Length: 588
Image (cartoon, rainbow, N blue to C red; front, side):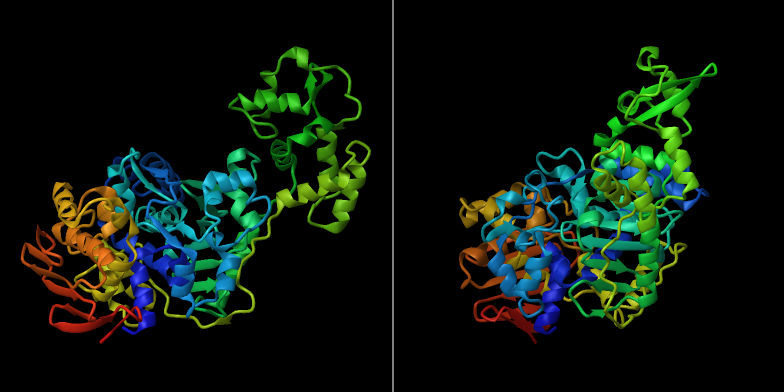
């Protein structure tokens, strides 16, 4: 591999936020790695999914939501994978993308975003207010195995993952468990969020552990409002799909232009809704400051009775019934008779008359003429009528900021995996297209398949980008670190001939002997970069030669000899490869 290839392929191992931004195909490579994983295929054997055999994909997807909510928690700890620095990361990627571009698009490198999304409370919530200096988190994305291993980590009661990991998990599980074709799954990344648009029925958006249908998107609840933040307030940086990707900063796009335009149309439909009384009630739920200008009318034995809108919303808050839907009358029956009056309340708009108005005039808040008519109609009652109309228009339609225009579309070979394939067939198919599809090839590095992949990327990642293991044992000498490794569990979080990185071993306190050897090599190299390090694997025996000689046992069935030295020689098996630390690259 040349230096650029090595940077990309080693990034498939560590999958940091910056690495995915610079090499956008990595996002979909992680999805494919999860699809190859036996973990998600075992979910199909769960009772909750076996009972849905023969049911439609949508029903399975709704069940998948509950499964993920039950099994995974949202990880907000930005320092799970340690710290790095802005200067180090900018220097690393300066040959790929300029620092100015990074600062405009990445939250850890100066991106400020929309005032609403990045207000003080939100920044504190995510912990971003702590990172105003050169030191920043090594924000990494996890495979499904690493997500599941969080249950081993102190402070976690179950599996966990941040938004990018959860998006990749959802995309893979939607295919494997729900039988949704990859062509119907679109990954949507913004500077601080990652989600998927699943093209099924009216559309479904994944949002961390939850799913948001179109009806839920416009229901005006606090949960839905939070789900809207990214698409409302941020530019979309990357769209990933089985046919390729589109990146906000790269002129060339590997996705087919028609596919991107199709997504834009489907997202536009999902993010738009016609104004009805129910939708308007949802708007008032979302904007309670306008409730005081409206009243609800009901018929009681032939007599009209009137109720303040804010009173009805108060009752709704503690009820299973909702305003303006099919349960509206049941909600009214829960209201105390004392809250009704027998005369129209002055200076308030009757909701039934408002419904007649929007139906008669065919009011569409996105249309300028409709907005003027609406402003005139409510102007007598609502002092800030222009603000009211603008906010209503914004509620019923969001314009997704897709990076589809002005691109040089150079479609790549799409990944075509049938939902009828077995796991083995998926793996065999992806193997067959590795030479012609870099996303598929990178997937095996994200999958950590050490049997079919070159080892240079894994070794580079292991000794350069695993700060947690170094920090965790900083007060121990090498002999003490070796003893500590012997006290950890001996089970790898990855099955077969796949390897965990040093920080995964350190975080989850378990690892195969070969994985522990790489952790010790990482510590030795960090403390003494001039020290030659050699790892020899033969059968179950692993020998690490560094400041001393250290022995481990491995069940991975891998036979290799790896040597990294200050002189620059790295040997893997029979192949001699030179690692030049000064220029930070491998060359054959």
